[in-house]
Length: 344
Ligand SMILES: NC(=O)c1ccc[n+]([C@@H]2O[C@H](COP(=O)([O-])OP(=O)(O)OC[C@H]3O[C@@H](n4cnc5c(N)ncnc54)[C@H](OP(=O)(O)O)[C@@H]3O)[C@@H](O)[C@H]2O)c1
Image (cartoon, rainbow, N blue to C red; front, side, top):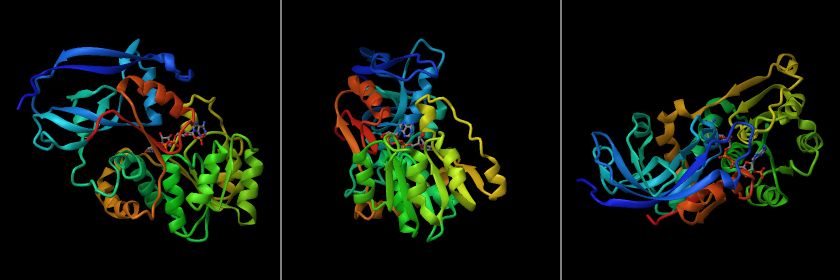
């Protein structure tokens, strides 16, 4: 079938933002374009974007060589034309999509990133959860903790950006394994949410409190066994002092880097040697083979409320996605942020 109409749609363009410059709303431009729908070649698909996932890593694409370019992020989308039997017309997919209403997915690496969602979707869970707690962020947490966390009941774990998409789930999964969980976040409202709704044992506001003092107090005499690092900033230096012998740092996120904070080099790496610490990274891209197992295990827990999540689903047009993205980077929302531009 060929989707033969001409399409008029809104699209976001981003002007080049050098590394070191924090994006602001003036960097984004919304344009309305009228174009013929693409004539697809083998394996290509054409999708209607429904829900855009706003993710911190997207910021780095803004520093490419082009003066102005389209933005690529992930979206939940419906296939409206297809020359790929794996993604038939009508299928709900997780798609690498530009910030626009319709996207032609033709680059081989983007076709590779397409995933069918229909079989995964549970009617008790909103579709937007599949970009967050039941999407790649959720899988990253589940898999990194299982593969590299080596979690043991009774240990203490500290999670930075704990009220974010990954942080919320990391805390709850650690709690389910019997660990004592400490988190930090950037507002008192987020700190209350962590303690009162997610059951964190301790939490503090890293923007208003002295981080070293707050973390030392929260850790107490038991000391710290695991740091689940979502930030990659000067907190690492504090943590290296507080970790118990054989403690672990699991480096999963780099929010300070996305925000272009001046990189910080810890001056006490010697702790790694003297305390026989393990410092390890985790990158989700080479681990997708366990995604099905993750959905099998997490979907019922999310559906019955045993695993909670707080997210923000903003409903507005494509034209305002840039503004929402800037607010998101600046910490205006709790948890996963999605922009719904069309109904499923
Ligand atoms: N390793 C992998 O394969 C993998 C996979 C997925 C995601 N990640 C990474 O994991 C990290 C967390 O992702 P996420 O989606 O869960 O993001 P997130 O935590 O929901 O990100 C948004 C929040 O980050 C916090 N933040 C922003 N700048 C910060 C800073 N300099 N220091 C501390 N907190 C800051 C803000 O909350 P506050 O109000 O608390 O400041 C904001 O609300 C990101 O770096 C992401 O790229 C890695």
